[in-house]
Amino acid sequence: MKPAVPHLCAVALDKAYRKGQLRIPVLRGVDISAQEGEFISIVGQSGSGKSTLLHLMGLLDGPDVGEVRLKGDRIDNLPSGGRDRIRNQVFGFVFQSYHLLPELSLVENVLTPLLIRHSMFSYWKHRAEFREQATEIIERVGLAHRLRHRPSELSGGELQRAAIARALVADPEVLLADEPTGNLDAHTGSEIMDLLCSLNEDEGLTIIMVTHDEKIANLSQRIVRLTEGRIQELEEAA
Image (tube, rainbow, N blue to C red; front, side):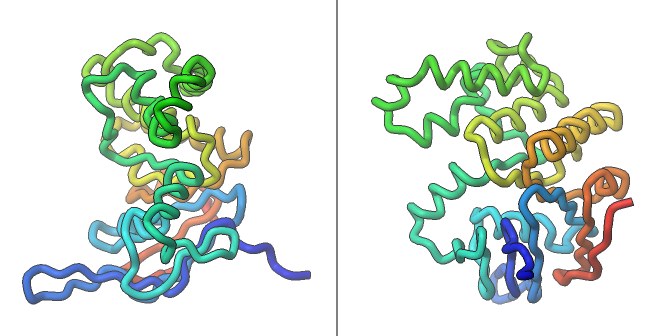
């Protein structure tokens, strides 16, 4: 029986950045794969390349060498329009910095991926449907009472929940989370992880998460350790 084709995988990724004449290697031949419905944590010290790896897998940057594959098909070499479509329709992104637009309300921020996906005519034609969709997601993350609030009126935990709602509104196949609890206290961080685990367990959402926190990593199904741009080891979470 053939092994299942990974939902998302990186093959022999190399990435370096330049600072003047200096070339700084970040990733060195990294291989990683996630099966559909899997929850993986990427763990490593600051500078190990874990965020760079996540950005490459999410097509936010391109590798110097290697490939990124979605369900067996290479995607990192697609034309820019194809990469844009995958970022909008396949991936959901959650970052340590929330990247919410300060002039928009919570529900308007959550709606932005749908506004980007559709033409202006199509968006306005279906705006009531989209708003209902966004409201349901906001309720799912426990922010129904904050629909009209702006980011400046939300706590850190509420801002992260809002960012998760925005990532989910477009119904992504894969959630890519970069230090989603990094700016939060332990209690609020635990609540965010409960939410992510629920999305994975109840809805089968594939999640790849970067974290430096061992306790947080152990809430996932599998841990990938990066050291100086190389995979050190893969292990089942405790």
